[in-house]
Figure (cartoon, rainbow, N blue to C red):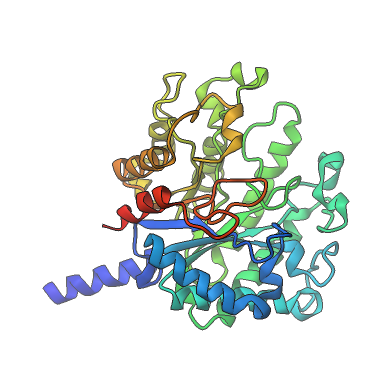
Length: 385
């Protein structure tokens, strides 16, 4: 009986937690190596064979220095297309529209993460979430470097998500290293959280986002074999006059909406819930305990499926324009707050933003020259024990 019980436990861990390297709790970081310091946003995955030896070394250094077990990256639709402005169409073979070299680079990166003892969260970012006509002036497709959505963008996006998942899972030697796929993308910003929150300024954005989720999530969830997460949910802590008039529940409308759409309406639960997290929000300066309420919204029975991500901490300038302040707080204290809250609520884990500084952002564990920040590294490494 004991051997049967152990077997069941191991099978369950493999199904939920990914490879042995990624057993919960996840301890991760968004991976943004500065392979070309003069070009901070250089898309290194598009040229992976050239930079692979450098990245392999970096991954091993990262594990050795911090003890993390998870890497987060974005896989963007613009890079995955032969013509970044041309979306795939139903009936087209993948080889006709896809940048196969980019997809093969992603698969090779997953294998390199596996070899370094890491699992990977892959955030698939399609900008085609709402029809072009809903907000034509703010579509990133206007740039010509991302596809321009038509009036039924959920069709092309569903196809793209499915094909990405199935090709990459089939191409990598170690699909078990994929901790989860996350359904991401923003019509205005590209690689960012979608607008899941209520948009009083343009209600059609929310209405069409709901339609997108209900059309695409069933396809996304069924693709491939690895765990799936719906979009990263964003709590709104803005201190603008508009948001200061809103209730805490309104600031959490992304959580209410997404839970309703995929659980109450579709009855299609995810393997994981993923959320952006701000420090000192539980309780926040307004006296409301936001993390506690998020657990209530998603269900306390699902706390072990929540991954706290994009941890806002030292170097995050966007925290300045919100009701939460980190002024004069040392970096390790901020990170410790996040880690303690994850443990308190029993979350599946966390990942922080980011691996490395850039000339314009200083939230990394390493500076732009590659020097580690010892106080932050020590705070993270302590979580391994």
